[in-house]
Amino acid sequence: MKRRIFLWMGLAALCIVFGLQTEGLAKPQYVVKPGDNLQKISKRLGVSPEALKAANQIDGDSLKARQVLIIPGKEMKRIHVVRKGETLSSIARKNAISLDSLRALNNIRSSRLRIGQKLVVSVTPQKKEPAPDAEASLSGDADVEEEGSDGDFLPDNLAESEGGGASAELLGRWRNPDEQQLFVRVVRGFLGAPYRLGGSSVRGLDCSAFVKKIYEFFNISLPRTAREQSRVGLAVSREDLIPGDLVFFNTRRPFGHVGIYIGNNEFIHASSREKRVTINSLDSAYFNKRFVKAIRVKGIDEGA
Image (cartoon, rainbow, N blue to C red; front, side, top):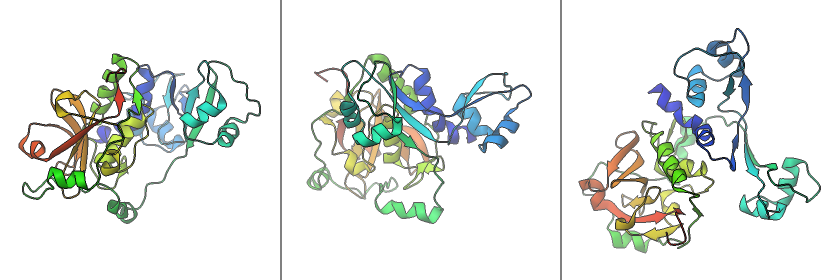
């Protein structure tokens, strides 16, 4: 269970390993020296041995000299690889930053770019975990996910009247079927992660934070809450679901719960009832009764 708690910290590295080569997160690294071991390295870097193992997919305790380790929890830089025809302005727009900020992050003055050039488009510093009381205060804006009562939920028409209309526009497209399959593997990598209302860290995360975190690895920025997430993307019918689609359910608040469809009529979600990320069927009595809509964030082709 401890390994699962820290597992998502290495998911960005997992994406890179499986071939998301155009854009990604450049993480600080450590090169193993002769005589090093996990305990020495973890003490030196200020991270736990379990976090190092999870981030680098290490099963045992043995290390090799000159082995390169990813350091989890440190400053992360999001990298954009310049493609043919791109300009500084188009890259800034795509990554939702100002042109001045893009120039400053990369210390560049000229507008000339070369294909394959790597540009830093954002820097995320290490964050301290908020105190429990401070994090709990987020719950007013987070998801109200009540799975315990079969009789206390909102009907479909009320949820729609509260404003769940999608934008009718995809936020991105899968480059190929392999990327879509990779997405499902990454989603499954979260199984067992702890649930926490209002949380979005290794200490626990709620349903919408889980969805948001997964899609961040695939260069899609989603809103924070389930209700806001229901307003983006392309609405699809339950019969036309494909892996990666978001499924929404009525709980004590309109669109109070969200999960990610993975195929075979199943979805993965951060469950308050089971206190962890788990898999459920859309045909189960509880979720079948509360299903309200589905959203496609990324499509396969123009007809998706």
